[in-house]
Image 1: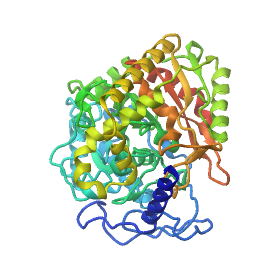
Image 2: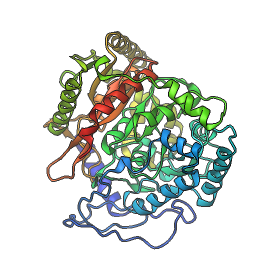
Image 3: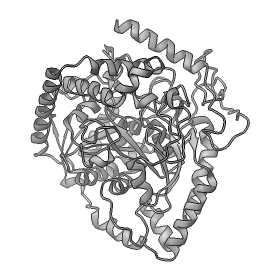
Image 4: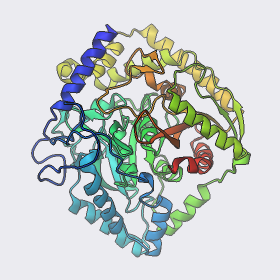
Length: 538
């Protein structure tokens, strides 16, 4: 049955890629006009194997690396804010740079398929600019361009959830996380692409098409916050949010060479991205171009404070930052967490990162927590989550939902109280084991994802290193086991690797911290990021 379902999913995915839908008139992209023909080098793809942006066809060409140093095209947030405060740059200047990057790259990448009216964006940037120049109190993210994941409601701006059911839906109010970032001064400029109902770590959907990887446009960005990760890597935004159930912040961060953080579960129930504010599975979180940027966006999301002058914000940020020397760190690590299959290029890149940390003076202990029970608890509670979120919609619209979403919901509907209770007990046991393990180390390191970014026309991997996978999320164990533990985790770039003839592709290293120790984890991650920076220079 699993093989039959896999063949059906592959056939449906191939059909989607051949016949891209056209967005409804008056919705979606903010720059109407004729399809832009993108000319690049490379051998033609086989018929039906290139993925067009929504409403247009890209020429059938093979891989293309459009961003030689993608994450570094804009200064870090701390420097941007300092430049604003000193008058060396302005929010209007920054907005123009981001819009320029969108115009240059998003015709190929399709990371931001729904864009806000540019006049409205400019008005907000000008307002922030005047307030900063006058020394008035402003939010922590004043004047910084921001993209919201397309599962989060945005007032007056289409929110599709990647589903034909909601292709024309325009919410009246912002989701809680969106509201908090906008109250902090971020300038909403676009919605970032996501899989249908954010299910799966390959960012494509029948409404808005597929998102391409900026390091190799024949490859996926991962998901489900894939549009956000690609937009950050391409310099199209400074601030981005996402959500993470299995791996949806960390996987695209790894695939796009940026930073993604799953915060401790649940830091703030008011920021729930689902109907149950006390759900202990999915959580909102930040993606960013650096660990320090991630720290700042995390602060805006989870530690809202009164507005203050921008120079006062800069002092506050510096006071919150605790610099860790590599020699002060004690880190546990495991390449395969006791037998998880791992693609050879991922393993090799991860081990080079471990060697670099050892050479920098980090104390390293090869060990890992016992994750026995994490699989069962996660898959059971994942099914329950989908029923909580989409169960009522399923009763009306099952035929219009993709099969993997239907599978998740039906897994949940088949549960009884004893299965749910057992999953909760198992998860509590996993949490306690991981918490006890973490008491002796500053962080636990493991590969973020078991594979490299795979071809865009592959819905999801079906094997890793010759080991067959049992379902469409089975290649994400190194992430969803951490989700099951409720501990915070952050993915940082740890090098590049090739998959056959691919361009050099980013690889992520995941750091797991102590529960509710998000700030301390970010301090450790920043030290690790500094050590690993030379590995990411290729």
